[in-house]
Every structure is written in structure tokens, then in C-alpha cells.
Image (cartoon, rainbow, N blue to C red; front, side):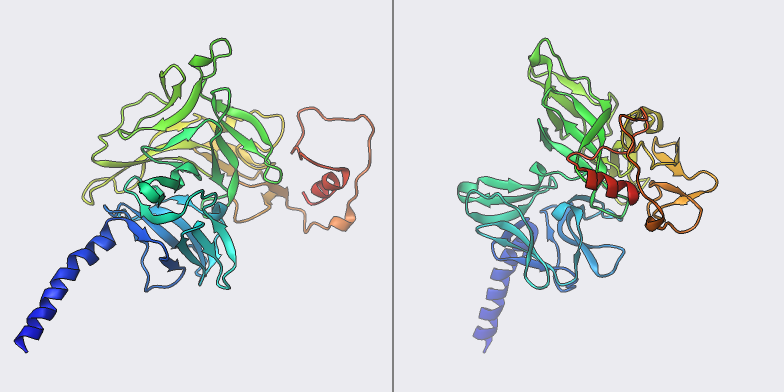
Length: 385
């Protein structure tokens, strides 16, 4: 009997280290899955447990976002999300398959999103300590990583190539793609611009990095690099670094960093202490672009920093504060930066119509550009505004 007990104890001790490693080294086997709303399952953690991958519950108790977030800090800030920020219901599942990699499906098993294109078979997944979820193929080659498909945030060691883009959220709690973009253009300039939500048409830039040289292309930018020490710069083809904002960055060993295109269109780099005893225990802005978005957006078309008919003022953190003038109210009470409409009772579309005026225009008064469009699309857009 003592032999059986000793043998059992030995097996337990032998298995324990391997079980612990499987939970803490950040790797995830093919076939593993997580179900939204299932409290018995845990997110996939990086080895340091700085980052987690899984489902985060939103304000609506039945809605969940498939995302990556800072795991240790109190507010567990989200830094990446799948499915273009569209949440899913409880019972939805994400798993790793050999052929498609990450696959998100609804409770009925219908596929909603996957990490395609995958050119090779997936051997395993890994939640890295840098904040990127990576799919690894044969020969330990990375065949997909979330860093290559950023949403609204960049993290240290992340690189944005020419043609790369960040999309803001629609609002603080709505992760669907909003109307602001950060783009690294083919000419080498890094720009901020607004866009039309329906057609993705990009309006004029309201910030640019001035890293374009039409005479000597080697002086133009082709990468945005967020290095491990916390500095963000545009790298030119002649290997010169153009810092987005010259400033002193706190020691990287003591702080987390992120750069986020906020839902209001302001690009901000933040830092947060790694230790629980540090103060303050929140994200602190290090710098922002532009300095005053209320006046820096001067586009002839599309919304400015705030919605139509709204008044924009800048706060102490260079963020816009939007308010409706007297006699107006928010068209959507849940969107404080949205359009203001006259408070004159309910709108009845049947009371309105459009008249055709030949060769007539109101310069600098265009609300939106619908591209592509048609007369019917334009008519419906105006009547529903």
C-alpha cells in the first residue's frame, strides 16, 4: 500500500511542473478553445501574464468582445480586437485550427471571423509578452500575428508598414470602426484624417508627419516603429528617424506604454506604472497629436472634430469636448460627440422631399461625400439625415 501511495505521489510531482509550464509559457495548442460567458474557462495568458487573449464582457451583460488586453492593471485596457470590433453573444467560441488558425463562431457554430490568410498549417498559438497573439507553423515560423493587423492601438516593438492604418472606435464603449484614421501613406507621410463611415472615403488630413520628400525619395518614410524604450518614430528609406513628438520617455522597465487613436480623433501616447504601489495607478498622457483638434480639422467635407451643429472646445488633455447649442439636442443621446439636431419635435420623413436645382452649389458647405454613389443613394442619405 505504501508503494502505491509513493508511486501516486511521485506521478503527481512529476506531472505538476509540466502542467504549470503549460499554463504559463503563453503557448496554446491546436484544438484549444474559449467560450464567451463560460466562467470555467480562463483567457490565454502571456508568460509574464502582462497580456491576455479571450473574451471581455461589455456593458451589455450578454455581449462579449474577442480581444487582447493588459491583464495585470486594474482597468485591463483593451489593445486589440477581432471581428472589426463587433461584439458577440454569450456562447460564442474562439478556437485554434490547423487550417485557419483562430476561428470565431457564434453559438450556432457559424463562422464570424478567422485569422486568414494562413498559407501553412498551424502548429500552435502563442500569446507573447509584447502583446501580440502569434500563430506558429512548422519550423517555428510565425505565419500570422495580431501586430500585423492593428486596430486602434500600437504597442512597443510594433511596426506599421507603408499602407498600414489604425481606425478609431466609434465611441468609448463601441469598438466598431469609427470615423478617424491614422495612415502611413505611400508617399511617406504619416497622417490623421476623417473618413465617411459608409464608403470609407478618406477626407483631408488634419495632421501629417512631414516625412515626404518629392525630390529625394530616400528621405521619405516607409515605416512607423514603436521601439522597446517607448519612442515612436517614422523611419525613412535613408535610415533616418523622425520622432513623432520629441519628448522624454519614462524608463521602459518601470512602465507599460501604448499609443491609441482615441474615438475622438486624438492620437495619444500613454504610460502606466507596472508596480501596484506606484502612483498614479492610471494611464497618463505623454503627448498627443494634434494640439487642438477643434481648429486643426479644416476639411471642406465631412464632420469636423464634433458632429454637425455641435460646438467644440478643447480640454486640458488636448481632447475635444462637444456640446449642442441652445435649442439643439444630440441626435443619438449615447454619442456625446455626435450630431446635434434642432429640438423641434419628432422627425417625419414623409413631410420632406428633394428638389433638383441645375448647376447649383454651396461651396464649403458639403456635409458628406458619398463615393461611390447614385442619385437614389444621395436622395436617401439626405432624407435620413
